[in-house]
Length: 132
Image (cartoon, rainbow, N blue to C red; front, top):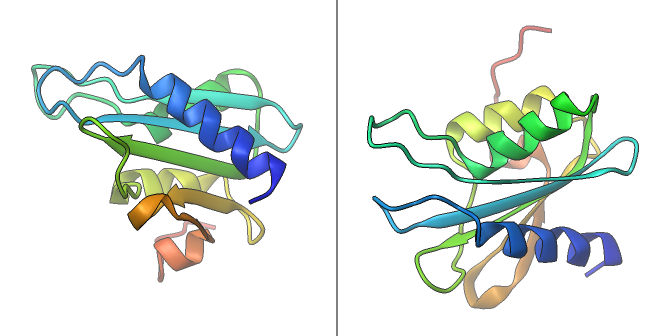
C-alpha cells in the first residue's frame, strides 16, 4: 500500500465516525485527493424522507467541487455497521466519480479480510454513460 492510499483509508475511517445513519446503522466515510493534492472528505447522511440521504462519496466530491477541485486522482471509501466490511460505491456514486475521473483515477476499497483493493472507474462502471 502506498502512503497516499494509507492516507486516504485513514481519512475515510476517521470521517466515517461523523456519519449520520440512524436508520440503517451503516456508516460510510470517503476521502479523495484532487488534482491539486488537496484532501477532501465526506460521510453518509441519512434522512427520514427516504431516499433523500446522501452518500459519503457524493459528499466528498461535493466538498472537492466547492473548494474548486476539478479532477479526482484517488478516492477511498470504507463502510459497515460496526466494523469495517467490504463496501463498494453505489451505482449513482460510481457515475459521480466518473464525472471527475480519468484513466489514472484510482478507487481504493477495503475488501474481504481488510484487503486493500484498487480499481479504475472503468472496472467498477463498465460501459458507463457519458455525455462527452
